[in-house]
Image 1: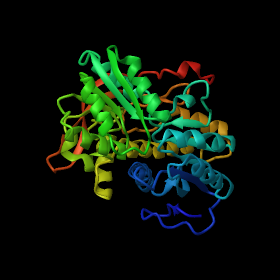
Image 2: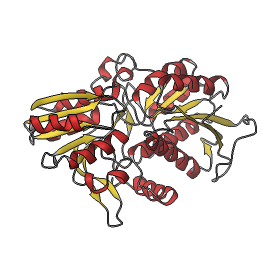
Image 3: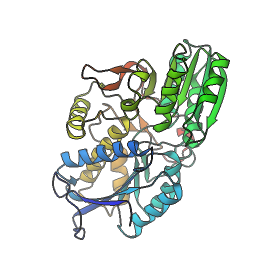
Image 4: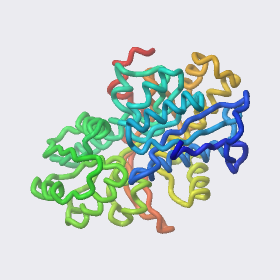
Length: 387
């Protein structure tokens, strides 16, 4: 099968898994976008998970971990086929993934219907948080709207008119919905662009013509790299730039000084002051020679969450109800500090506004400016029938 990497964590070196799985093993599928312009997000998620697994000695809850990494290619149909192969050929117990909401929505049903637990290290679609919540799905990240709610609340007393822009897919709509939920000013204009668009000259001209007090963008990955560069080139830096997942640790190596001073919102930053986070950031940078992003932090947490849950059930993966309860208990040390799941299996955690800065070593990262929301319940949890 193309674009599949078999990894068996037999040692810190993560040797290839050619031998059949032992009875004492747990089989984990890792579904990430690992090709195309969005690959940098998937690489962060994959590497964050594998770093935690290495720290755990290649074992999860005392069981040898057999890991199969697959590339979803950011194509829902491809992702569904890879998910089926994980179930039918590899007999996985758990899947860590995906990176994008459209892929998450495509694979969650087939996986959970097969009895597989899904731990999301990034997307938290509204459809899985409310009436469509799923007993076997756990968002280890956030609900998609929440980082934007942070920025909307923060900007409300700073900008009377804001111009909104996002790609035209589920997450783009969720993120702008979140911003509008807490923003109390006027929306100057709301634009949606194709997910693969790279030239924003027309949109930047519209922003200049609208003359808003601020711009709010959700433009992840390569979209953000081009948008921020072109924003500076268009001479729009006098208009304050707020965003989520547009200026972060996956885009900053390319954006560099173009992004300095721009704002974002989220549940984590590399300078978050917890012992676990300091250790994680140091270990990630030492191993991969780059600054971790939230995608890596969430996947790292997912590994420790799973380890704690499997430990709690004594390695008995056959008792799915017990494992589900153990996952929901979230009895692990998160890089984010205090962490718990709400009734819909989405986190209860703090959220911050961050700002891009250049470090003394010349690298760029987001840094916390202010904690804005304290352990909010997402807007869809009340619709979830789980208790």
